[in-house]
Length: 126
Image 1 (cartoon, rainbow, N blue to C red):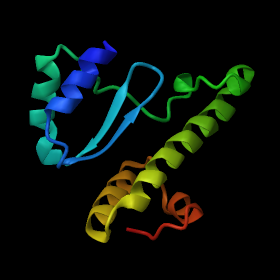
Image 2: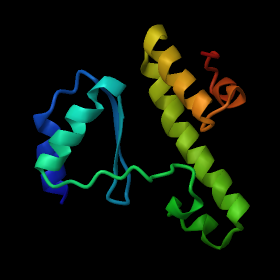
Image 3: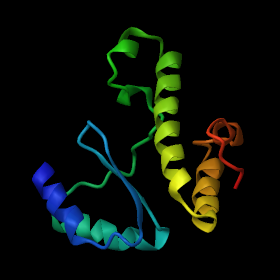
Image 4: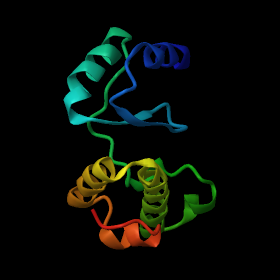
């Protein structure tokens, strides 16, 4: 599977791919321009790579860190949010203002990130 995914990733244009994140759950997360979605899905389908539309990055079940395994659901939710926030904010720092504003605004409007989260990473409001 990994070699198939690697081959697939090297065959499509990365000009409209803003970020690729490889988690340890056999998932690849793409941050792309919305206009590229159809083309990316088509490319992934050519290599028989399943696209999951139901992935929720704040789901506490995705936490694999052994420390919070026996913690409460609330603690796991906090851990998932912290990990997601770190990944997103590290990516946002690399973007120039027009792209930063669009991407940050998307995550704020979706409710996955709030303005206080951005401020905690010294990032401006979109």
